[in-house]
Length: 189
Length: 144
Image (cartoon, rainbow over all chains, first blue to last red):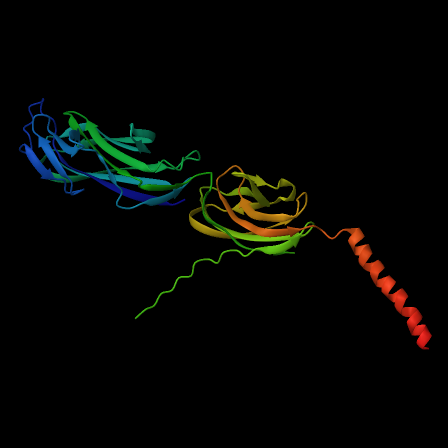
């Protein structure tokens, strides 16, 4: 069976400091470097928002996949997350991974895995990576094609940072997927 | 300068058959599947009764096809034989499908089916020839 890899970049973050963490950005509009979308930053909630239908909604954490990985039952999928961290040493942060179905009601987690991660003290943003390997089970559904990962918790606690890709996987399940079905010829025999 | 010409697949032309004939239909498809599997594929004539596709099950042919595990699309070409029986003369479509799924290929009105020649019709032909010979024999003998 093959092992295939997907890599997700969670960006830069620091630990929460008792709710008094200073806002990283000033209030205002920004361009999301990942999507090119105009987004608004509210320093009070420390949240990015985007404008949709005249209503501000929190910016999503799921993005179109930059590539697709084709998998079958028994294949292994290695998901690698990376992020930049600066701050005090953290013990026991959770690096969390999931494969599932993303829809209007959120992310339906079909498979999950996690690692406990200790972060050393960094005074400047330093890249950290972590990975988890899933084995595709025999009951895999053809619609389990979304993935996301997050890091959270630990002591001191890091804020939950989520990032995911829609339609990142092409899954070959027990039921065949047929295409280009056509009659070529017919004759009396 | 490169000139690229792409031909669309030709439409199937209608062909004449008689009740009792065996028809061989050749078809192709691409598939992916996570594990080796055997699927049943059926071929048969059909026609429409109003908006309803009516399969002529009495004429259906079936084949079991083995699909090996494939994560990239693999093309398969197969054929199925079926005999035209339990069917009235007329124009019928040709259907190839994987029962229980929406995977199918079809072509409307390509089977033009006539009645099978009956034994009486064949016997009438033979009797006609014998009558002709019977009428010619006296003439031949008379000339001698």
